[in-house]
Image (cartoon, rainbow over all chains, first blue to last red; front, side, top):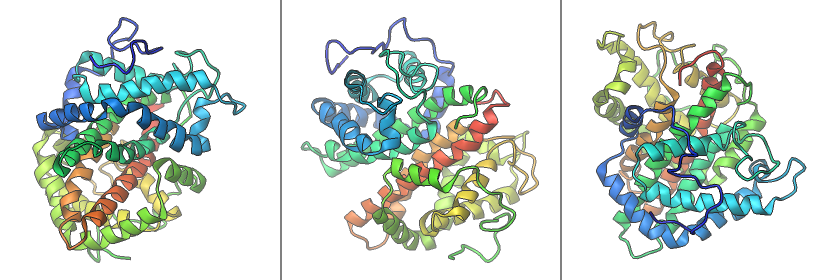
Length: 203
Length: 203
């Protein structure tokens, strides 16, 4: 499997440290149908993985360093409650963010992938945020901001998809497949938030 | 305001029948920032509204009649619990679906719009589904399927945006603004689902 580095702190994909997702493979399959995800999309994601593989650092730098850093209500989730930066938290989570780009494009969407989607989502909720890196920061990223930020991830990825010698049709195909995957992932990420909402009043 | 028909059954936008949203205008503003929504996007949505205005019937026919009708786990939400069609339910909700396209493009995103987003979402939950039209159908559309289906709404709108004499750049601009708006709306629609989850185990 393609990795952005030999060692990625806290990256536990496919290991025993990741619990089984409460979502079944059958539910995942029906989400794939809801999203309109096809074999062609899978091929376009593989193509996107090749195109993006040597650009993940710049992409995450744009997302985290340029966009999120400029939006206080998003930037705070990588800072201490007092608003101080936590450089190693950013560095480590940025590496996982980079790897997530590759996993989105190149991993088969199987049980391991499903389990890790749940893990990713949990790490944004009060149940697991900050624990992987042992930091003191906001307790939870609100689901609404994750849902909203998908639009930014979608828009900003396009120039990177278009930066190699692919045809306009291929770029649109890769972008379409990327967008479908993110919508599918967002649907999965909603799960622990909805579970958690039962015992919390936070949106 | 542009309407798809003089009378749209159950369409209560801007009336006293719509409760005030629990989301504040300040929260809406920070969601606009999270989504990266700009004045340029607003202009592109206006342009999209003009382009789509005479195509809303075909678009909703494609969504409902061609795509959703072919996906049993989505189609059931317009049917009786026994799986029988409810033609007037489809007809009435299709009219509102058509109008939603225009509202997405042409309405100012103000208090009335915010309130109606909450109303739209509630009408997909067990709190209000089926009531507007007085029908017997599934109690709730799962949030995950709404999140997933956004990808379909996004992809399938593009040919309609490209069907007039606009430049490729304008088509991309309209499409980008549309996608941002839908992500913003999805974030708002999550609200009543998360509120409801507190008293329910359904995802």
